[in-house]
Amino acid sequence: METEDKFLDAAKRALDTAEKNLDAGTVARLRAARRQALEAGAQRSLRPAWLFPVGALAAAAAVVTIATLLWFSAPTNNISLQANVDDLGLLTAPENPDFFADLEFYDWLDKNADAG
Image 1 (tube, rainbow, N blue to C red):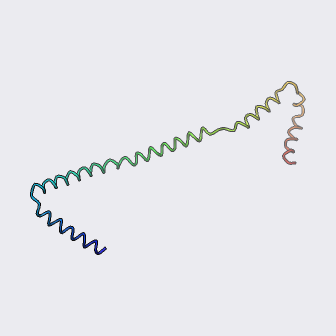
Image 2: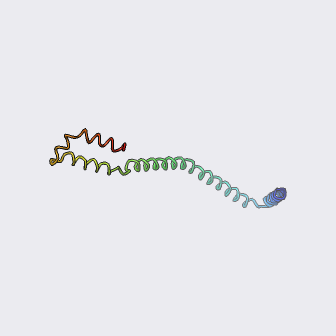
Image 3: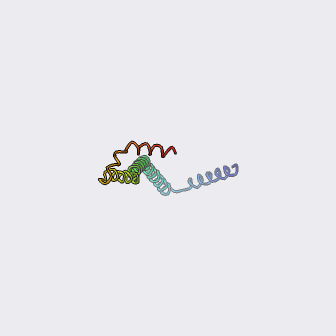
């Protein structure tokens, strides 16, 4: 750390001495180049200041939209719907009207089948 500080001090002194020996035209060109670089840097630093929040909002909106689409387009349980349609076909079949006479028995059988 100490040797680095010594080096920086020596470099600064050498550059200051070299600057004093420059002619007026070179000094004017260096000042113009320095001013131009500072102005370009100031203009460049203003652009990303608004870009990041807008980009973050756009990304968040895209994530919410995709999540919503995926949530509502999830496949439904078609198996239970098919089973209900098959049961409806059994109940409405004209061949077996005796089925309706014993509905209480079938209900009891269904409840006790789970228990046993």
